[in-house]
Image 1 (tube, rainbow, N blue to C red):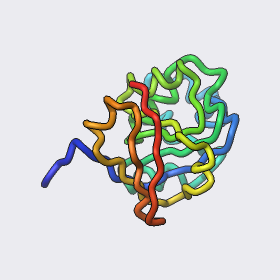
Image 2: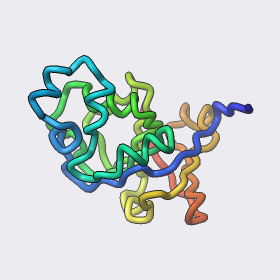
Image 3: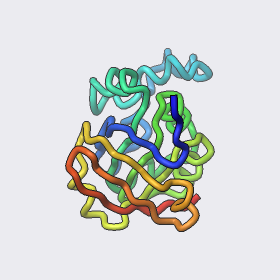
Length: 162
């Protein structure tokens, strides 16, 4: 098997709107809170309130990308969500904007935070689109990375601040 550390190709596992909070992503069920150290149990509830099929999709595909609008986890400073995303195999989060703490937590959990250079590109990316982040090693140092939407046959640029 050839492994190319210079690119990531994966599907969009979910497309989220603006103002998604921790309670939208992870269940606040008391039984789960007792099991807080069991990341596998907590992960099974991830994004269930928004999309019942997310867990099956991300499990079947062994991870992928999350695309979201503005203000993802704006009021959240802990890293529970990012740990769950990492456990589920999320490779990158492409967003219109990032809370600095959330962005740092993504990086700490080996997930690439990417911000649309042109926020209008958010509308062009769809659920199930296959995205390829290419020239990753070279372009990360420049802070701008090209993302090819293989499904739609076009591309867009994202900012990366690692």
